Length: 159
Image (tube, rainbow, N blue to C red; front, side, top):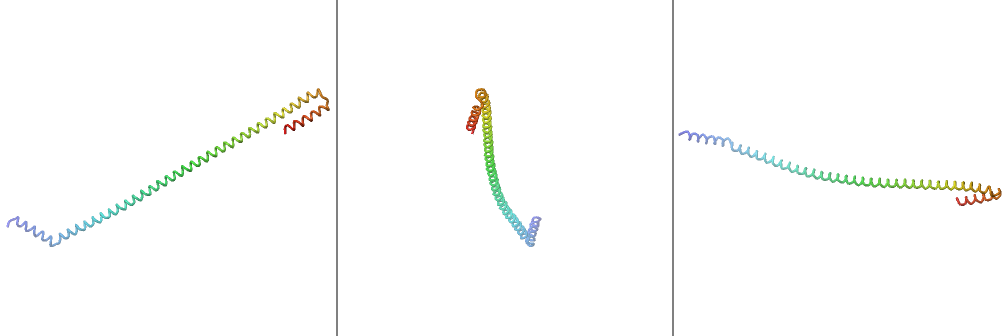
């Protein structure tokens, strides 16, 4: 019996002890437990991935809604600004029109006042000139008559 034989016998005894001590079952059980643990971790990772995808989809949907809402707000603000601008332009035009009309009325009043003053001055000058002319040519009774008629005629024309 030589050394390789005893090495072989030792090896067989070693494997026998291992089988007797149920080491292969323990190894298989350990590997099965590890497999189960890995499977659970993979299932958990898959579940977490699905949740993450759902959250991502929800956040993308919320982002799109927020973008639409922001666009609506901007569009509303633009419409409101346009309306306010149109209102301001309309009010400015009305103000300018009122001011122009008021200025035209003032000008017309000033023209009327000037014409009245010129007429009054013309009447006074005409009366004074007529008085001087008639004073030398007509006696007092005729002069009073002429003056009264002229004054009545002027008043009738002025009104």
